[in-house]
Length: 262
Image (tube, rainbow, N blue to C red; front, side, top):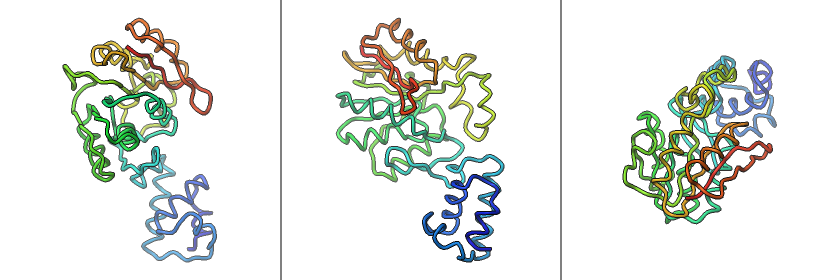
């Protein structure tokens, strides 16, 4: 079997096939396309076919490869953590528009947001909280890989930082309603990192209720949420006593992040 035959017989999206064949062979995607006649060694062919089979069963490419890029950082990922999404980069960009020397990342997962903020602002103290011990293993591995000093805490939301205050709190919490039909397409990812009650807002309610007591004066809370949840989240923040409450759209024009300051 050569590169062209492997791609034709993959049975998956052409882009995914090129990525997986490149990973299986050690060649670049460009080389996979440029040298269609290149023959695969038996062990390489077996690896490529395994990758294709896993993708046909619905396993995300990021889990097959064990990595995902986020905000210029290549991060290790596995089914213990949510795969970082491009839309979450908006949360990082909004955070970096604000002055802070201390920041708390709630529900850090792979560590994506905390690591991106630390890399962009090295002097800042970055604390990252995660309830899943397995996810913390992944996050710590990523911090070591990129030589970024993050204070990791194991616990539930703000319970892990009792008595502490921060100039900025950010979170990409679970926000998918339990009845959302799209959950069927996300079966490989940790349900606890996706689902937050009947309306998808349980985690955000808990965060917004506790966050003001952990914010320095004029400190900001920024929370990612799903399409259509922005109005409810703005109301929560306003009711919680935060000011300058507003929502920001992602590149698709969908209100994706809502925030306010103490």
